[in-house]
Image 1 (cartoon, rainbow over the protein chains, first blue to last red):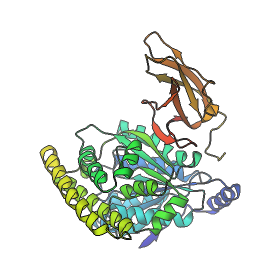
Image 2: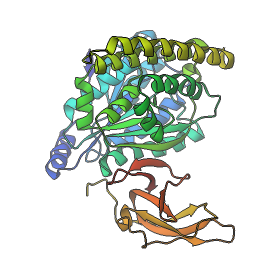
Image 3: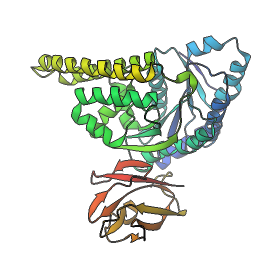
Image 4: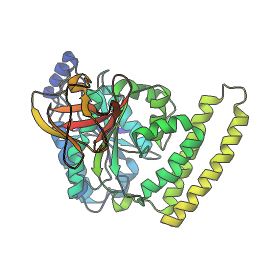
Length: 317
Length: 94
């Protein structure tokens, strides 16, 4: 792992950090997850980094932003002068780039949030910002104007987790995956917790969220799955009676590079099932009859997954 | 209050509760200590209940009391819980 710190962390920022710490008020740590596949059109990333540039010049309120970039992304683009210029003159100018080899997006989250956590204090909040959305569109600009609400809600109202929800139509692939896959599987493995989660959000796999220092510390110390981490976080909020909020961030759609095919949807449903199985076993293995109960749930889970895949194939295939 | 909390900027916010059959509707929230009598809404000719409130900059937890029953605002931008653990709505004021 290689860190490339741009020269913006001068004495002014350090002084601001000390002043903020002395005042006892929390700060917000923005963590940008750079798109795994570099979009040919930079307009969405340019719009996003206009926001990051603004955050970067408010050191009393925001810590120096971090951008997590997968090394595979870098090597795929290293011969492209436009990419190298954007990385150097925009991304590195307004944020610290955390170059990391990652198996999946959730490992990028883990690296970025973990790195930010080590810079933070008890009152701080960590703000995850996915890079692969259409921020350059008119609707995307509106969303960019609302995203700051997530960490501010966590700070002002002392929430442990604030999840951003995006509006999609009923036939949107993410909506279909959550309706027929994620929630159906959650109702099987964690029926009580699933009902509580659904009281707050229809998007338990949201990539927009802000999390408080103490809760993030708990999450980082636990097993970290390489995928579907928001679902695990949502479950943990219910298991440990944490304070959770949901906030609508707008209507936004994935960039074409990130839209799900049936194969991708299938993979996401299967991953969700694997994660839920593991979490269930970890919580229930101390019980004497856990194996029998597990076999029953696993048989039901297989039926649910198969049904979900039939529906997804009909609608996305 | 943290540096992110409500500032001294007031902004008018409209609250609309569509409950034509209700006998009374009031607005409760952090801004009035969840007092059920502090901010009643007025019923409009179309049956909806309405009130404009001036709220400070920041994020506010609130709900409607419809005939005494705590009711979420379906038009709200967010959902959270109040200090009593009840599910309530969330309004950003900027």
